[in-house]
Image (tube, rainbow, N blue to C red; front, side, top):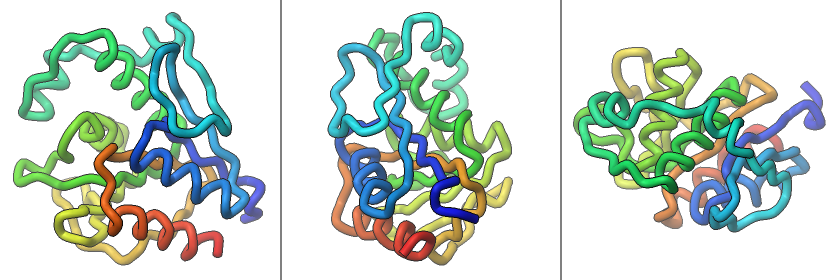
Length: 182
């Protein structure tokens, strides 16, 4: 596949999303970053500001998300918009790559976890680089399986993750892009 066919879908937030975007730019990959008015972006390349109606299309019941994720989400307007933009990121990509931490209950820690759970619900290939375990894991449909650096097989892919990215998370993103576009 031609490099020009690839698009990274992300959110341009500080941390993992900014790292995904910076790697995409260095490797000549187009990026689309979903955001909303008032959100803090670490990148401006490929910004796509979602309007009120578009955000509503990605709305989800916080009670449902809380039950699914085994944690409580507060009903703040900002959190709701973040979850709505994650809906766009996951919905747009055919494969999902996340930087974070897989917890004992098989969910991913933090708000990023909703993106991973939504990818599971959509039955999309899902890979998480677990910063605590220092390795890539692939969702099998039932459990997380250890993985090598993934091969991106779809031209539309999503990169998201924690704002608290560590050096090994940055390196994991670089390794992903080098393996696939280097």
